[in-house]
Length: 222
Length: 244
Image 1 (cartoon, helix red, strand yellow):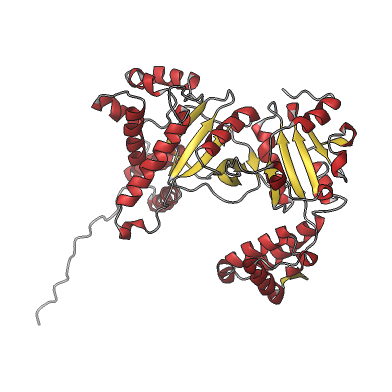
Image 2: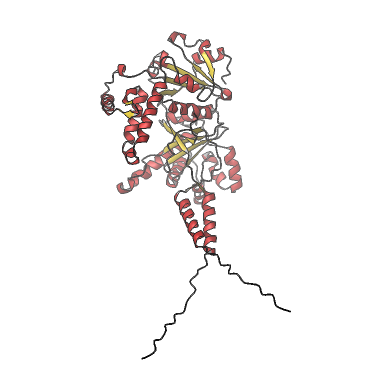
């Protein structure tokens, strides 16, 4: 019997062009990337035709969810640390170093300070559940002379914390760095106006009258 | 003669297998695609008046009544506007009109306001945009501040800083000087509309942002977000609108 001879083809594929394309894509993604913050309470912002972008750093995000719960966040860890220390002093609470570390890893602050220690000891799943149902108290604290609410205290603490950090910078480092935190209000489409009104009124009370309303871009129809 | 020795170089195979590299690249790309967002959200600037107990209602309201429009945002995305010619008429429920969102509704009402149509301002802004966009890219950056300043002028009513899709440099300089010295002549300016935005407690935040956006589109410089007062209550309840 004659042997059947199978012709062997060279199956080598040149991957170089593919690798070239990949490198290009990768470079593009790396350069244009801003990382998604894993926020627990997410909101769908309304649309506008404004072109201006949200500043990429030095922001103080105030999230108002459809039920009117308020959460605050900032992108600067230093600010968060300073604000926390101030808040703990203000509200006479304390945290262990471990709890502090967990706190700084949080993307949003949304529980009353007196529950903070308990909150930080929870598992992540429990924390998500609590965050989705609590919010920072916005009613004024009756025992305080200035009748400020915990929300106002947080905003003030963050602002001061950032200012302190900024003032400690060397003059060389100061160029290109915003000199104060920019307040960004991030509310859901469905949030009732009464909740937004209350937040704005509280901000006005502490002399904060400039905000950025976070929106999505929508083309003008005509 | 010695025989030339043929140099016998050993040929090495220089092909490198790129497959593992491509694999790794794929992984990295997938990671970046999933964990980053490309589009940054937009920010709309809002300045609220600082709280000042010494301010009376007269200080707040310096615009002429006939050049004012009040917009009410109500429940279920409903929208009403209120225009009166005389101060005494304010509070009369029959002047309230319902309208819709978008260009055929509220924008039309603003554009064709009887005493202070914003149509004129929008046309001027369009001309300014045309001028700016026709500039070469290199000059656009240098003229950015001029553009913004001219836009403020138009919003104040100096629509003659542009003509024939061009910026009138002489007029611009004159107005710029006047604005710095507070010597503007009201006769040079076209009447501008003042808008009172009054969202009811049961309206949504989406409505508020949409109406603020409308202020940008319509080139309105004077607008304020205000509280509902007793007179507004009369108007609204007179038309059977639920306030809470």
